[in-house]
Length: 342
Image 1 (cartoon, rainbow, N blue to C red):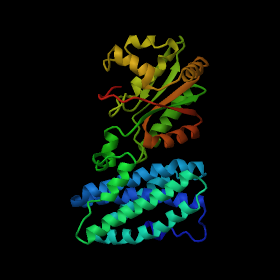
Image 2: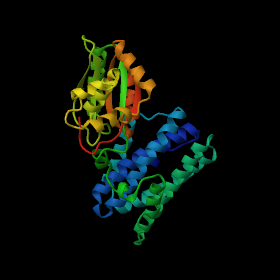
Image 3: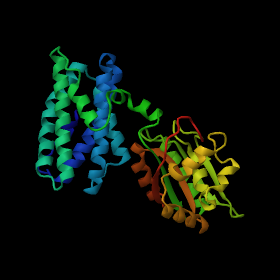
Image 4: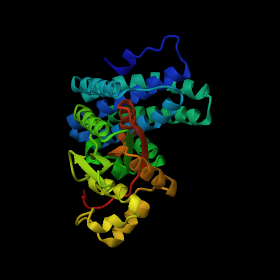
């Protein structure tokens, strides 16, 4: 079953309903085009660029959807992706192209309606952009069926307009994630006790392992010991794929109460020299003076922090999960390292 066959709008064309359908449709498209790229190597680069465009649009829809009270759970996101994958597995390139050409026409109406009746400039721009991306897909697929490929010119133009180069667009998503994603984030969630933080970290690790879309770069717990020293322990992978690694991140946070002096004790191991230590402490976690004072106060009060290194596509789901587990989470963007550290 195609996505548009499954999602008939009926009378409900509210902004929230259209946002949800748009968001879920892009998730379906990710699964569809990623699987097609595997099945049809002769079109792999362009199909991967299509999947990259769909994945970009997922993140485009997400914050505007949340602002409007629309949410797509991780479970539902994976379901849409699997349905797109399943559809791609059982049809030829030509058949999928013909269906997609027809369905992008139906989606045009959805996005034009969203743009026309948007209650904000941001939503109008979203509707206009999603309309443009449907036309880019349709024009490329038509050109392939006609035997005169346009090379996906409009697809690459759309992505480049949104800051994604041609070279980036044709890297499969899973390889992009292995290379380090786009932006690394440290999520810190505070819990009343070390036991509560340990339980939350274990639950988070089990949840992450059970999910196809969640592969975080490290989980750890930070707490003061009986002697008043800040200690940290890690679960799972020690080193980041291409970022600073959970050991480095938690080591930096642990050094906050000492003004960074405890970093001299080798908390970064052999990963970096003194100049790099200073860079990370002052800039790597992008923390303000208010942030560091608050974090130090939480640890002084006997609270424990669960730290999770995520990439930007994972952060929202991790925040939601940590809230569900009883934590109070916050985020801090981190700088990238070119070598694995941890």
